[in-house]
Length: 130
Image 1 (cartoon, rainbow, N blue to C red):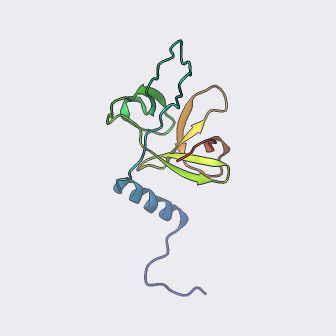
Image 2 (image 1 turned 90 degrees about the horizontal axis):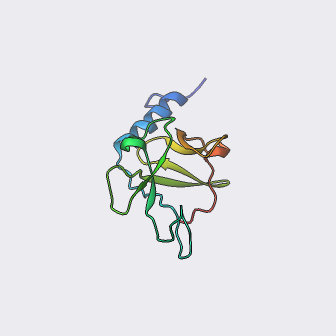
Image 3 (image 1 turned 60 degrees about the vertical axis):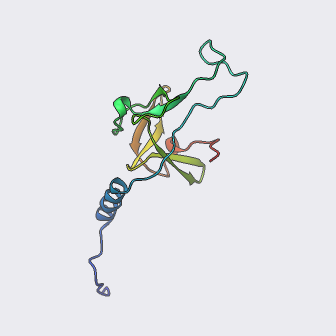
C-alpha cells in the first residue's frame, strides 16, 4: 500500500488544470517578438526599419489561431507577450498567462497557437538570444 498524505494526491489531469489556473491568475511579465532588423536589410521594397511584432488577431490569443504581424512601434494592448523557455533544441515561445505556444505549420508559412509541448519539434525555434 501507499503511505497516506495530508493532502489528496493530484492526478496528472488535475495537476495540469491546476498549473494552467496558476498561469492564468499570475500576471507574467512577457516580452514582444519583433522582426529582427539591421542597417542594409530590405523588407518588401523598403530599406527603412519597420517595427513588426507577432500579434494575435484582434488581440485575442486563441488555440489554433494564426499569428499575424502588426506595427508595434508604439506599445499596444494587442501586442502578444511571450515567455521563452530553453528546451533541448532551441527555445519554445509561450503566450504569457496561457499554455499556448507558437507552432510552425507543416505546410505553408503560418504560425499557429497550439498547446505547449516541449517535445513538439514544430514548437522549437533556433537563433533566439535573450
